[in-house]
Length: 311
Image (cartoon, rainbow, N blue to C red; front, side, top):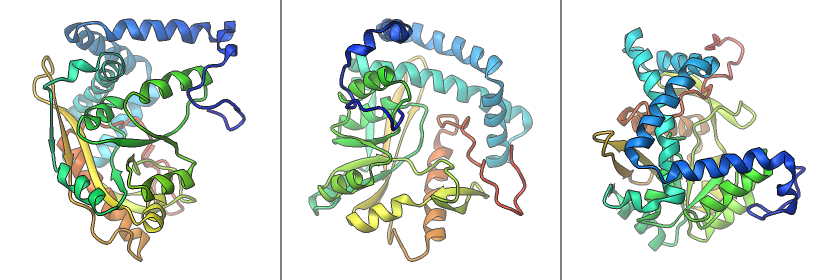
């Protein structure tokens, strides 16, 4: 969503009925129809769409392969390609899982387990907000939905450029999250944390060194955001790692939520050390289900002078 847009997130506008939005409306109806399909059909469609994406999205494919080569040097080239293809499959599966979370949430009944909920509960009982350190998972909003079955999460999000699409996603997410906080709204983030909210936050993308520092990620220096340090320092919130993933047979999947103990002394006086520790937490999470991460983002795009280019 552009900063020039003046509509309220989630609010319908009559301009959305103009011809320029008809394609989006058709896509919305199509997605709703996909959501009512049985999982067996959704799963087959996900594999077919993943094959198409693998074939035609050449830039994303190359980025995924390169990221896996850098982060998992112990894998052979054949293993890298096998896992890269599975990233595309998991992304498409996650799209259908998100549609199910939005339009058919009962599908998840009796499929979810959780570990470590007491860490969030204890922090909130002590009057603390909770910054949930997570990742950009291919499960997308399905992960938020399964978490919402056990506690009340808020989410940090980046608005869409298309205002109609932004309205749709905002309204769908409103069934999962009590609060959706714009990633640029630092005051809102701090306010909700001070009010004891648990906010899902993913400090795992490269936004350059104006917003971060270089810190190792899978052993390779990567631009790592540090905004969460300021959030934690001002709000006195607890930093609690959160990870969710699919496991078991793909034909009858199960989902697990892993909540780890609060990170000690975060933030410290050393922002590079803090970034390194958070990156290590994310590494350990991703090793559980390596292909359920959005590896098609250029995690190592920032290369200061003296660093070799990755892509």
